[in-house]
Length: 115
Image 1: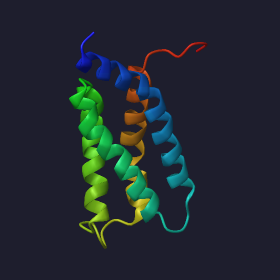
Image 2 (image 1 turned 90 degrees about the vertical axis):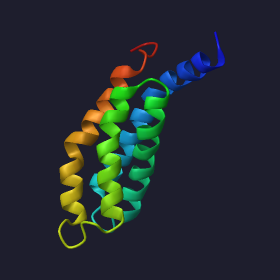
Image 3 (image 1 turned 45 degrees about the horizontal axis):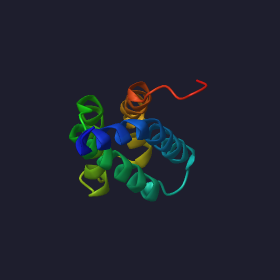
């Protein structure tokens, strides 16, 4: 096995954990009633990493789902939607795309022993 294939397999085996991490961050964000900006920034970092790394390892579908979420949160964090979209509206609009991204991570991951 060459080094690139070894890295791809390691990435493949990390997908379930990436899905769990993203899902946990999303749940924290949904539960927050005060300042959602730090949680959105953390979610953005997770999604941004996925949008770049997934295609690099051959998971183009995951990258394609992550990219628009990445861009949308980045725009919001830069204030490009200031006054037009509050954090609640942003979170609501991201619900379906984030759920699809989380599901794609779980679907791409190899089955875990005992599941």
